[in-house]
Length: 135
Length: 402
Image (cartoon, rainbow over all chains, first blue to last red; front, side, top):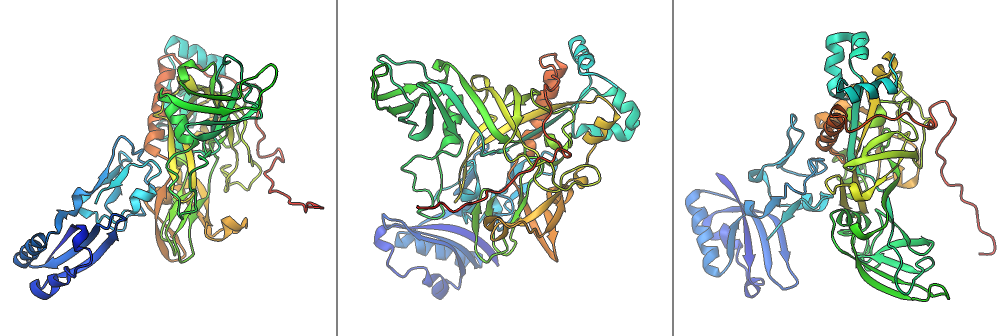
C-alpha cells in the first residue's frame, strides 16, 4: 500500500459539502488529515495522507477533481529559500518527519522535500523566514 | 614566547602563520605543543547568531529650520528610536518594535519586523522613513519631520552592541506539556528538543577562557569590517564555577563591541524574528588570538568534549528566575544531534550558525595572511575569574506612597 500526500483546495461553494468521506466509502482508501483550514475568504484547504492501491487512488483523485476540488501534490507547497537560510539548524528538531537534516561535513541544513508533510512548524520556527508554505 | 609586535612584523612581511580554532587541533596532534607554539602565530575564532543586546547610534544632521529630536518622538520605518541624546543623535536597539505590532496579543506573535530588520535594511543601503515630532524651542523651532534617510547621508552610523559573544550559554528545554515560544526558539513539550546557542569550539571566549589576550581595545572582525572591543559586556559574570581546563560551566563573560556600520555587510547583520518572543539581530563576529606562548596555545586547543553547558528548563526554572538545572551536557553531544537527559534522548537544535562562524574564521585568517589586518594589544583587561566581579539579579524594593 502506497502512502501519498496531497493538498486539496475546496472552493467556497464546496466547503460545507461532505466529500472526502467517499474516498473511504467508494474507493476503499484510508486517509489521515494532516492539516485542515478554512480561510477568512471561506476557501478550504485539506492536507491528506492517503493510503490505498494505485487504481483506487487514481479513481478517488479523479472523483475529487470532478466535484470541483483542486488537487495538488504536497511537495510543491513547502520551500526553502537558500538565500535566507543561515544554516543554524534550529528547525531540525522541530520537524516531525526529519525532512530537515544536518550535513555533518558542510554543516549545512538540507531540506528533503519528499519527507515533508507540510505541517508548517519550520515556517514559524525559522528566525530568518527561510521556510515558506503555500496552500 | 612571542609578542604582538613580532606577530605584526610577520604579518607585514607576509610570513605569519594563521589557522582557525578548528584547524589548530590537528596541527597540535601532529607537531606537539612546543613546536606548534613556535610555528603558529594566530588562531582565529568566530561566532554568528542572534544577539538581542545589539544596536546602532547615528547622527542625521541638521534640518532647516532646525529640529531638536531630544525629548521628542522618533521612528524609523515605524520602529521607535531612542531620541534622548541632544538634537540629531538617535539610538536604535535590535529588539525595538513598531507601536502597531500586536506583539503577543495574538499568541504566539510573529514579530515579522523590528529594530533588527531596520538595522539590516539600513546597512543594505535602503531608503528608510524617519518620522519625528518635537516640542520646539527658540533655537530649534521645528516640530515635525518626515523624510527618507539613507546610511550614506548620515554623519555617523555606528554599531554598538552592549552584550555579545557570551562565553557559554544555557541549553534550553521544556519539561511542561505544552509548546513554549522562547528566545531559544520553539521548545516542544516533554523534552521534545534541546536548543543551544554558541558555536562551541569556534566561539571566541571558549578559546581564551581567562581573557589573557582579549581585552578592551582588541581589534576584531565585526559584521564584515574591523571593529573593536569597547568594554566588557553587560551581565558579565566571570566568577562562575569552571572546569579543570578553565571553561566556565555557566554563562560567563560577555563583550561590548563597536564598529563603523557604514562599512558593514548585511550578510553578517541579519534581522531575525523569534516566534512568540520578539525581534533580534544576528551578528557575525571574529576574534584573533595571538599565540604568545604555550599557555595561550593550550587554551585554543580546547575540544568540543571539554565544553559543557547547563541544561535549563525554560518552562519553569528560567521564567521564574530559579537557578536549578537539569544537568550538564557537552558540545560533543550537542553537535552530534542528540543529547541524553535521564533516559531520554532529545534531538538538538542550534541558534548559532557554525557554518557562518567557520566562514568568518576563514575570512579573518585571510585578512591577516594578506596583511590587511594587524593585531592589537588590549589597552586594559576585562574582569576575569579572580576579580570577584559578578552578575547580580535585581533587588526589588517596595515603593512607598505609590
